[in-house]
Length: 398
Image (cartoon, rainbow, N blue to C red; front, side, top):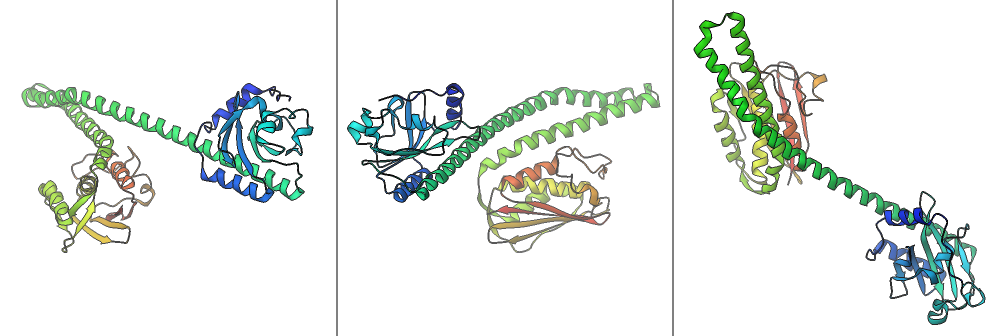
């Protein structure tokens, strides 16, 4: 017996094998289907998908044998990966000096072998798709072609597994970074609130107590300080709302009377002297209530703020489809220019319009709405005409 030589690029090859994350994994149907198929096509009792590790031959799929690894120094596959051909065939191992006294031949009657190297996209031989028989034999050209073709499919499964592994790792990394960013935003926002409240209070105190001592320019500067601190507070509150919106999703679905949501929204905005029009027919729906309420708060809040009519009018509708609930929120407000409609759901993007109180938006509210709607399995769109109003339509998956 002659043990297989070690490839000259063995360290790099082993790194490539490890990168697929397949060593010591459980059997999988996709690979077992291939080995069973190859055994049937070639009429052999054994078919394997192997990966050559440093000192062992790991059997990712082992049709016809009960074990899932064997020593590398007695492996046929160790010889197969050294060959430049697409398939390595040993018709009678007893007559080949490389295998004559091999324990696989003497103890397990591994007489015939054929293996197609599994080459990665980088050209490294990872292992083989191979067959064994207990008697000498040959393969037809068609059988050889099938083995080589299926070996390529095995490599594609390897690549798919590695890509999925990479995606899972990237997802975990992004989730961790998002958590860190969320925590950071919460800490910074919380720590800014107290000094910001002090600035606002001091600015108002200066206006009340020392207004007569300042000239017009001085009083204007104080107004700027107060206005800026109020604007910054809106940004901080919006950031906290945005990053805490995911917490609402943890509440889960619950039976909810639609009318109770509308009543809650009207209670929140009753001071705005607005007219509300809701569906008269009540209905119980199964939804994440806190998340849905937050969506309505943001949409209705915008409908009232960006409305210069003497009496703002907000109309909501509801429809139930097979897989989704469909809601709309319409207003008679200022509307949104066509060219600006594409950006309004982006974080910190605004349409540049001032609300009915002369303030500009933060660009956080609608980004929060989009985040919640998406996480609830739905979509959101709008239809708007300048100076006539806007209708937001969003869906929530049942």
